[in-house]
Each structure stands twice: as C-alpha cells, then as structure tokens.
Amino acid sequence: MSAATVEPSRFAGLKRLRDFAPGAGAHYSKARNFDFGPERRGNVSMLSPYVRHRLVLEQELLEAALSHHSLAAADKFVQEVFWRTYFKGWLEHRPEVWAEYRRSVSRKLQMVENDAGVLRRYEAAVEGNTGIECFDAWVKELQTLGYLHNHARMWFASIWVFTLELPWQLGADFFYRHLVDGDPASNTLSWRWVCGLHTPGKTYLARVSNIANFTDNRFRPEGQLTLSAPPLTESRVYPVEPLPTAHALDPGEHYGLFITEEDCHPEPLVADQPPAAVLGALATRLRSPLPVGIPAYEFAEGGLGDAVRRSSRAFAVDGTLSTSEDWGNLLLDWASQQRVKTVATAYAPVGPVAELLAEAGEKLAQHGIRLLQIRRRYDGATWPHAQRGYFKLKKQIPAILEDLSIHPDREQLQKKAG
Image 1 (tube, rainbow, N blue to C red):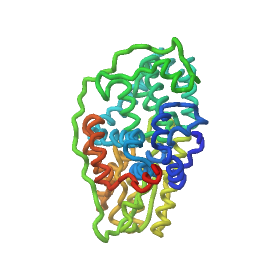
Image 2: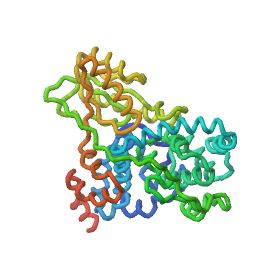
Image 3: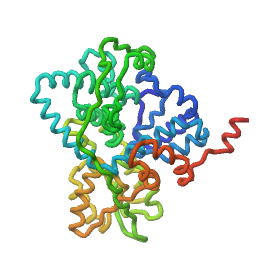
Image 4: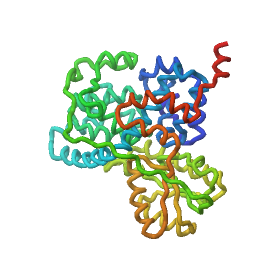
C-alpha cells in the first residue's frame, strides 16, 4: 500500500485494519521502523489518518490486533496505539501547553519575517531546498501526500531544530498543516520530545548511520547533520489540571447530533437515543495561520462527509455538512430549525475543534441551548493514567484492556499454534 491510496472513509479504514491485523505481531515489530519510501508502506499500518479522525477507533485497533496475536506478540503495535492515547491524555491535563504553542507560532512567524538569516533558512526548509537530500525529499512527500513515516518525522524534526536551527514551533506548524493525520497532541508533543522539552534534558538527534540503515540506504547525509546539540529548555512549568467534566444525554432527550473532524464515528455514542438531525462542520483551516495543505484538508472533509452520511442513514434523519467556522451562529440557527434545546457531540480533545466548541457553547447557553460533549469510555479509562510519563500508562495497559473487555482471541491463537 502506498501513501497515496488513503481513502477518507470508515469503510476504507476498516478494510485496511482487516488487511493489516494479521501482520500486527512479529512482522510489524521487525519492520515498522524502516522507511522504504512512499510506494512501499506495507510494513506499517497506514491507519493513523483514520484513527486521528476516529473513523476507526483505538479500541477497534486493539481488538483487531489481539484477535490474531497475543498481547506479547502484538506489543509494539499495542504500544503505538497507547502512545497516541498517552499524548492526548497528557495534553488534556496540560491544555496551556497547547495554548502557549499556538501563541508562539504567531510570535515565531513574526520573528522570522524580521530576521533575514532565519527567513532564508525557513524558506529553504519549507520549499525543500536545503541541499540535505533526505530532508528535501521528505518535504516534497509531506506536501504532496500529506504523510511521512514516523521514523522520518523524528529525523525531520531533529534536522529542523538542531541542524537548520529553526524554531521547533514552526516545524510543528509545518507538520500540522500538511499531515493527513495531523493531531494537536501527538504532533505538538512529539516535536517537544525531539527537542528535549517533553522529557527534559533528553533530545533525539538524527544520525547518518541510523537514516542510512532504516531507509534501506536510500539516503546517507554524510557531513550534513549536527552531531551534538544541547536540549532546548523552558522556564515555564505547566501544572497538571483535572480532566474536564464529561457530559451525558438525559433519557428521552430531544437533541441534534453535531459531528466534528475529531470524531467521525459518533453513532455508538448515541445508539440508544437517535438524534432529531445530524450536522457536521469543518475546522481544518484553523490548524494554522498559514494555508493548510490540500491532502490534509481533503481527508478531513472527506472523512467528515462520510460520517454525516453514515449517521444520517443510521438514524434515518436529515444530515448536513457545513464549511462555516462560525459555529456559534451555525449551531444556534440549526438548533432553532430543528427545534432542539440540546446539541450533543463527541468530546473534542485539546485543539482547534475544542476551541470552537467552547465559544459556540457560550453562545448557545445565552439562548438556553445546552452543548453536551460525550466522552468515550476508552478515553475515560486511559487519560487519568497519562498525567506524567508514558511508562506509568504502559504499566496499566493489561488492566485497561481488561476493563474495556479487550482480550486476545484464545481460540484463534490456538488454531494458529496448532
């Protein structure tokens, strides 16, 4: 499977999961770190765009992998799922890290404009004209396909920060506006991790031998990379905050279902209580003050459109997709048209969607309309364990799987063993 064949629908995501799950054990563990190029992605799942928009759910990934493998055999894949979960939970406990990142992007863009030397390096980087062959190739791949192998993302970030000496915030912004799986938590915190901010004092330095080995010698940037660099530091300490309160529908409540790109499979959340109507709206352009990449926008738009169509069919109600970013007036008018006093949506983690929902909720409340954000059980079971380092969450994985009734399929595993 190549990076260019990622179709934005739940059907396509589930098919990809079915095709991948049998190889989620030893094969994935051995081959996952290799970046063979955009036309050779069979060693990785290519499921991240679907999971990022929750066209396919984390729980479904875990269930599929463990239907073919023991927990030990699928350990690397299971941990990849939980790393994504960890980043989301960590940022939920520290929303000000996101707010400061957003503010700093604007400040760094202004700084670049006022510094000719930095501006030249920045323009060369985002145009793929640095002269570092691997980096320039990844820029073009990212802009064309909206995707990079995870290992390449780490190398890219390291080169951006430590070799090109550019602000990490602008690199994170570059990724976020181009990646089809661009996620506020995973993207922001991965860049902070490379820099030595997420785990203070520990950086990730791209090395020639590592790049050559794991790109199957496609690239060998001899003499072009910084070999040592101190970690970045920050004086601010971000306190751990409690998770926001989760909401629930009252029994028999008459409501409208609002779908965002943060969660494109809301049907199970309200399966026992069908809505009066369905509305979807995009926030993709708000990822950055700079233009968002076409692949990223089109995947989010396609996935959201798929969600609206599926939900309206499932509940046999009207479904509408809007491009308005004025969600307060959009939801107010829609609620009036549908004669509902409650708008329900899947809980949106920290990011642009959450920001828009917060503003819309205040406006709706002024007119006596409730905006409910329904949190998934998976998030409620995992996020409380993500307040500190990843390994505190990792220790809880068996208990979390048990709590969510996710077990290896022993009958299937016995058949494979026999």
